[in-house]
Image 1: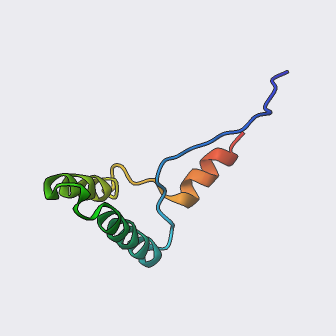
Image 2: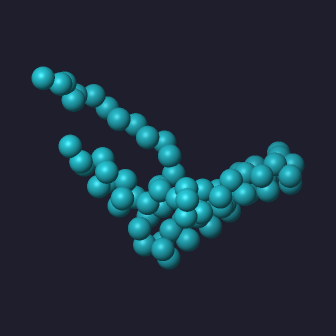
Length: 75
C-alpha cells in the first residue's frame, strides 16, 4: 500500500481561467515588478524579466489553473 501523505508545493505561475482576469493579473505582475525594482535594475534586465513573463503566456507554455487542478485531482 502506498502512503500518499505529505505536502505538495508548486511555485509555478498559473493563469486564471478567465481571460480578462488573467490579463489584468499579468499587467499587475509586470507593473509591480517594474515599481519594485525602480532604478535598482538596468532597463535591459527589466525588459528581459518582462519578456520572460510574456513568454510564459504563450500557448505552448501557459499553465491554466483549472487544467492543473483537474490533473492534480486524478488518481
